[in-house]
Amino acid sequence: MIEDPVAIGLKSGWQVTDASTQKEDLTIEADAVIIGSGAGGGMAAEVLTQAGFSVVIVEEGPLKSSQDFKMKESEAYPELYQESAARKTADKAINILQGRCVGGGTTVNWTSSFSTPEPTLRYWAEQFGVKASLPEDMHPWFKRVQERLNITEWHIPPNANNALLGKGIEALGYSFNIMHRNVKNCANLGYCGVGCPVNAKQSMLVTTIPQALSAGATLLTRARAERLLFSGDEVTQVEIAALDSRGVRPTGKTITIRSKQIVMSGGAIGTPALLLRSNAPDPYRLVGKRTFLHPVNVVACIMPERVDGFAGAPQTIYSDAFLWPEGATGKMGYKLEVPPLHPLLVSTVIDSFGPAHRLLMQQLPYLQAILALHRDGFHPESEGGTVKLREDRSPFLDYPISDYVWEAMRRSFLTMSEIQFAAGARQVLPLHRAFDKPFNSWRETQAALKKVTLEPLAARLFSAHVMGGCNFGENPETSMVNSLGQHHHLKNVTVLDGSVFPTSIGSNPQVSIYAFSMRNALALAQRMGTSVSS
Image (cartoon, rainbow, N blue to C red; front, side, top):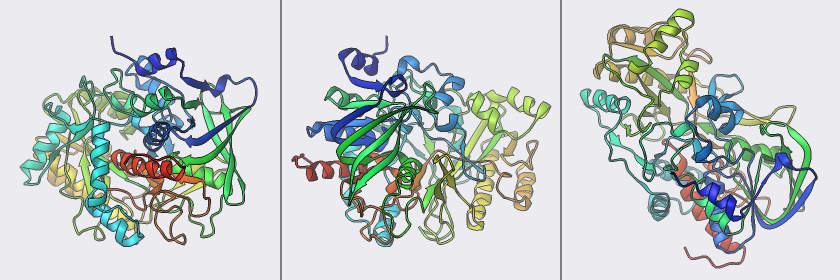
């Protein structure tokens, strides 16, 4: 039987409150309140409780664990993701996959683990004045995170979906690499995106959050941070709305948290949204600006042999051969990976209809797919998007796509298609609404992609990585927080999540968030008055 640390912890007396069950308003006092329980919040919770502080963790989603994870997409998406995995940009052009549960995105990601690319770190230092964040500064922190979360190279042979990416890249004379994954005793099931049923994924759900709760932290679930209240340049309390059992609508009950320190870890949409709802000081109107995705396009293909892309570790092969084609500031580059091909996920992204759609789904075992993860934010024409509020004060991301970005996507469509034919594909289908059936040759595909119109809602675009909107740097005129995450205008607010990054990263961001959050949480603990060994 799989040991469930959450079930064991709850039986041992963890202080966990499901706000949907609240019958009356509640007030809590603490040394620190952490808003969000994902990569940043989870790391902060462990650091601050180990330092001896009283901590309250606020999570908008539910507390679920391995006993709840049944490898069913129909259950996981509404329970574990923002907007049932259907969150979209303002123009509906990009679908955004974001976790909304204890552990946040770390509970539902595909375990791909990369340190921040060195060119990215150097660009941040040179262009944004981020201190002590060069590769040599961050290497010890990446190492500590790798040790804490068992991040190691994946030694089991890749599934066919990944192996075919490597085969095609190699056939064309390019290079590929083996991924590192944050897993322990992995059963190689392949359903990482719907919650690990064997607790192999070393997410915040099974590592730092249990550690913090066992040390005395309090966890509030189905609880949405609505507003910060201020006195001068300090936040005096956080107003929390209790949500219903679906974690969607407020019940009318509130929780007030009075805390000495406020740690904002709601992610690159949630953190700027809370600051906007609170009318927080923002003299240079920076909150929510320069919010970045890794915009992703996909090419599917039909192979002559079974691929079974729904089974086996979802991502184990990658290529950076196209990531820095002209350095950081030239043409936009892209990282190549593969997505897992689960039935519900595939059925909702294939653009065909009726009999054509049925025919493609019947060939699901033979489908292979490649995705291109585009590196945004390093060029004047790639400015990202802006987090805004709807009339009901809920957030959305406005993300216009420039010609500079479309040019990169045309190149990546061509690259992925060529790789698939080189790997032996019988037919190739770039995910674009102009293409209602697969192409039979590389020449035919190439000709179609060179002339097809690329525009919002035509090319099918996705992203599971949101960064920026509250970026760090030492100049208050160009950044919201300093290099340690301290808010420039609110002396007891620290931001520890992906919103601090001034560009996208160029690789899957979880390790970057872990490392910067661990470093900056330790610095916060020291400022709070307790000496913490670094």
